[in-house]
Image (cartoon, rainbow, N blue to C red; front, top):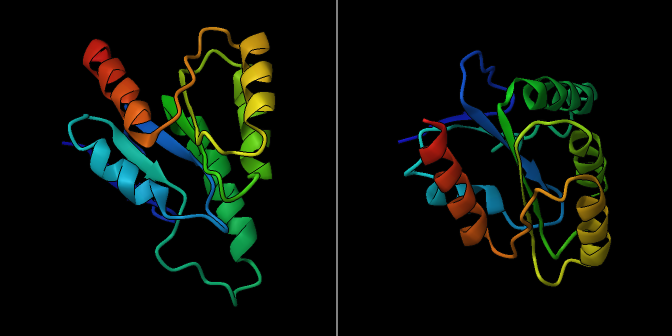
Length: 150
């Protein structure tokens, strides 16, 4: 059974996976992923807050700082590109983390508008990444990796 850490809660343990992907203008796919990953032993780091303090002018900076810190603390990163948003920050994060050896799991909704770009760029930099096209397949990859990791 996994543990769950939601921004802005701090994490200081190990064997964590960061759920990188759309937050604004898209469904709460992170909630579904949390359910799908229940069999894993990973700590799930979720940047999507239940209640984001939209009226707090410093909230965005704090959120970005939390994500920056926890992306680095995580042992692996799961990326999901939903069809509803281009997710420019997630594209930036994928590009940055693709240049490292950190384990990455990548899922793209079949109707994501920049699907081909993500597929081509990823294949050029990290041909070891097996891109999948559903949350279920993405969770299965993580669970299989966890079984081999433990």
